[in-house]
Length: 280
Image 1: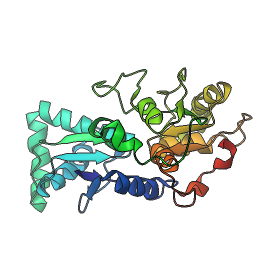
Image 2: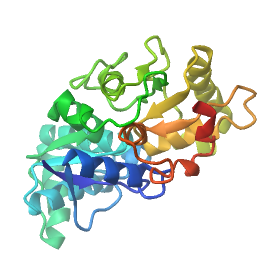
Image 3: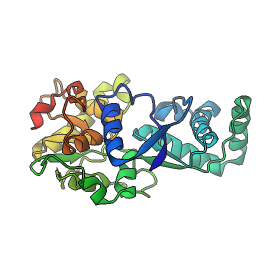
Image 4: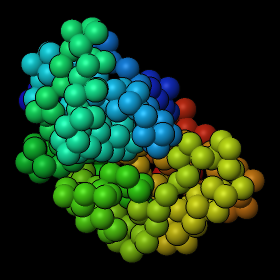
């Protein structure tokens, strides 16, 4: 299976996300074709300005994908996923804006049509693969491994078309597929981590992250599993000096890699701020 791939700005620097994504994708037969000459999507911070440039950034990514003959763009970041989808929706509704964006793109010979599906890798794995295609790679028993599935706030909102907006289950299903135990009553699974606001408004964002961690720890989760680089970093880094018991925060691809028998070194779990050994 081949998909267009927009890695986004934080992918390479995230704690083992790139390494685990590439390893798991190879095993599953997923070919991620990187969009050539991609740029930052602007994320939620720039998107909020509602300027022409804020629309041009995600539109350019999609136009580049179209130029490569790709029909789907797979993301591994909630902010990237959300920004591309919002831009696609807005440009479909506003002909004047669409014209202005395409005028800017024409300067480098690009054209945006919007004929693309925007997806997240986790959803692709759950919906495009059969459970048996995943289970056949399992080499390690994770039946005693309790995982709190943390989706973040942007994957299912505002559309709620791939999963429930407030209590999604896609990652829960994936956790079960690889033999681990999803925390069924994890009420913080779609709480916001504060995203980039953690930099300027740490005092406001720390309570958000404390709730995400506290809910997982109080219900005996051994790890928190997420699917966004900024979510992972915020929830992981916020635990220091929080006064709460610390719990590792891993990516869903690292969890899959563990089940597939890949080593902690291969999955770069040593890059986590909260040591993974606390969870096993």
